Image (cartoon, rainbow, N blue to C red; front, side, top):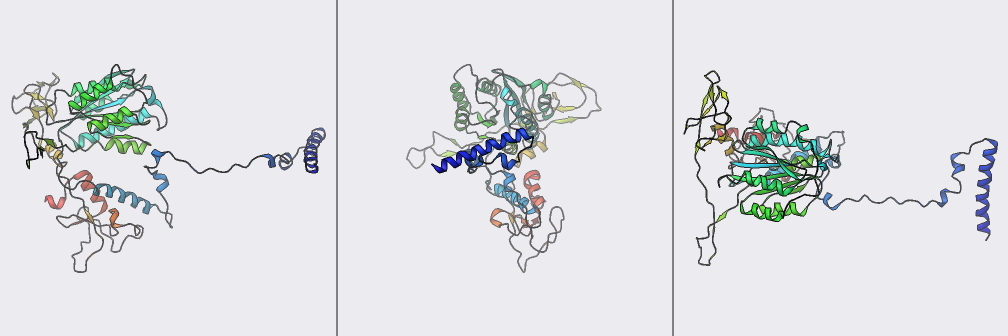
Length: 454
């Protein structure tokens, strides 16, 4: 009873003090204003930071970067280099059967959901930028392939570019942003049906791939989309999806049933990495011969069958000659290439002759596609130098002098991670040492060991 009276008197004193301050014109201090009120407010207990389940499998790079004692980021950079090397070491070292003549249809989501700004500047502009980079890199690694582009907007599928092996022609179609302004809802069924129709005439030795950049959570389809899925399985069309919003079951089903890759981009960097995973040609599945029986148990063994195809190496015409008509565009021009079979003129290579249908390629294009079948073996990190070993003081590639002692900043690196403390990476065949920069250049750009090839 006395405690309640004291509490009420304390509140009355606060009210009297506030009234007195109004009449006297004096202001209360912050401590006086909050007197008697702070005790009534419940204290908030800070909650632990919660993350979504799909965030657990992806490590944010800005949380992983830490400075060392000297304030340098060299050790963190070395860990990223080690991670990239580890990924390459996990790749198959033996020759894998792949399709060097690829046909891919890139489907872009041009719906209103692509204007969301969860990726900077927005999904639409970032997708166009990465699509241009992807087309350039794809043609550099697959010079014998062809790419077509289809857009999804307003519940329809729009053909932006047909299948073409000319990189400038494909890049020109997605260069104008205003012509591809997003609107409406996407339609997966219409887009995949249009992509399948454009690849229905392709021969069996070429791959049929569909890559979808999908940023919506809905699809407006005119019919049963599972019928489209069955047709893709019958026509051996490989469908892959890079989702920007969230996972959709129908997208997952398309990728699972057709042998494609599905993933949800968490941020801009993850989106870029997922998109560029489709640059190398995918491995082909072994075909089963139903008539062959092994061991008398009725099981058909797996055999690897290959198809032979005819290619022609054209003759290049100089730009100083007389102008003639090309069969691909019907334009009078001086330069071009002559088909070795029918002697018709085409503008660029690689391409298919419009008259005789022969695949016209150049020798450099064929050589660049060859490295996917027989990749360079990963260089092994040098752990320590032997006493009687002939030590090379310089890199065999660029001539950079190797350090005599171990890297101090990378002393915490482990050889099991693919990183050498000595900065040396040795070819398992020619036994020559290369620096880390030359190692990355040989495996990612050159695709041939300089010493082994010479």
